[in-house]
Image 1: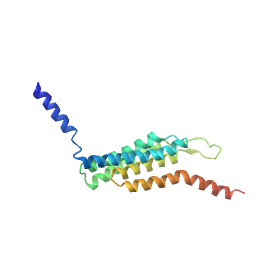
Image 2: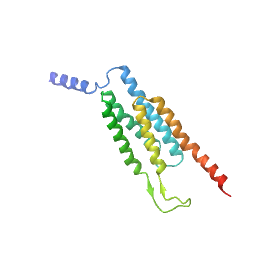
Image 3: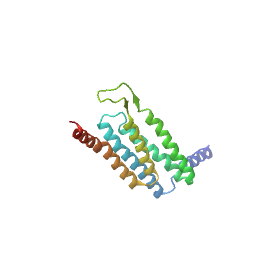
Image 4: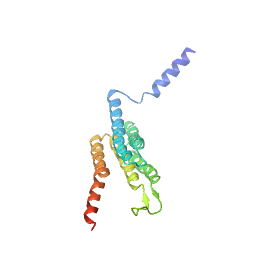
Amino acid sequence: MNAWWHEVWVTLQSEFADIGDAKQLTQITVRLLIAAVLGGVLGFEREQKGKAAGVRTHMLVALGAALFVLVPQMSGSQADAMSRVVQGVIAGIGFLGAGTILKGKEDADGQQVKGLTTAAGLWMTAAIGVAAGMGREATAVLSTLLALGVFSVMPVVVRLLEKDRTP
């Protein structure tokens, strides 16, 4: 019986041995945390505006996208395999984004379609997660700042421009 438990223990050790050293553990942790935090920043902004996809959704999208590219990268996948993984993430997020788009009757603002910005935001959040997962943290941070600008500053600019055009 003792040999059986030893075999179970050795098997469990080998199953959880995918992180080889402290450097790899640090890389994985930093990349996943950056993805989750940046997704959370965008999600917080959307949640404050009362949009359907908030903090948790954006965090999970960014974290999932980062994980999808991180695992094959850490496993030594070639560039063509990584290209297919990224294509799969993009297609998958397309389905998620499509679920946020609603077409209805024209509202007071004359709009029929709602959720396009939310869908685009989720797409952008996935791209930020991919960047973080591939170790392009500075690119992920810069992209997040630019997306925040689009979400926060552009509505003000549009309102000011529309105000100037109104007779």
